[in-house]
Length: 234
Ligand SMILES: NC(=O)CC[C@H](N)C(=O)O
Figure (cartoon, rainbow, N blue to C red):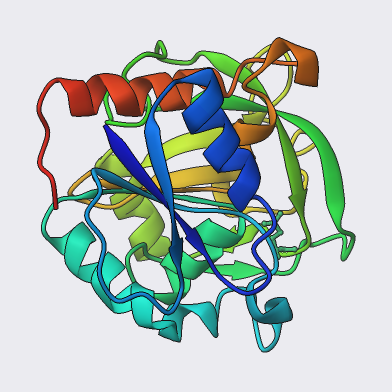
């Protein structure tokens, strides 16, 4: 399978994603410069970082990069897209996912492990996880406070589009376990079609024992398994 990791000016998790896909999972992985307007891959990764210095709003400028036109086309054709942290913010700004990201309610940049509960294990990104599985994954963001209108939230819940929620180590969704004030403890959502995922926590930072945890692996394993079953290639 071929993965494309998009590099915006200010991306800082591009090399981590590339490393995990290439060296941990042995996948063919290429970098795609934000000015490129074509690519030929099976899955697009929008990595974390501070694209365009987070000016205006995180992701607000990156969304106009030439590559994003192609990413939107790819997603609309059913191609798999995963946006992590800043990548999630870019997907929201690009309109590929509903809602918006506000500054963390505590106004702090939060950088530590959190627990996530898998709310939907029947997606291309979570099919190797089990329902309600608790994953320990790090976050590192200042704007991770997910917000949407109540109508949209109801739709997200009804459609199973809420994929990850912040929880405690026991898997209970509580206010204390919410690091940023995110609505409904949302840590990750998927689009209606199910081929575009945005998540604030960083699975690429916990996909090797030597980095202190491997709970992020299940997401990459799920994507690879899904693609190997012969999925739509954008
Ligand atoms: N790690 C990241 O991707 C940082 C996300 C974003 N720039 C923020 O601080 O909210």
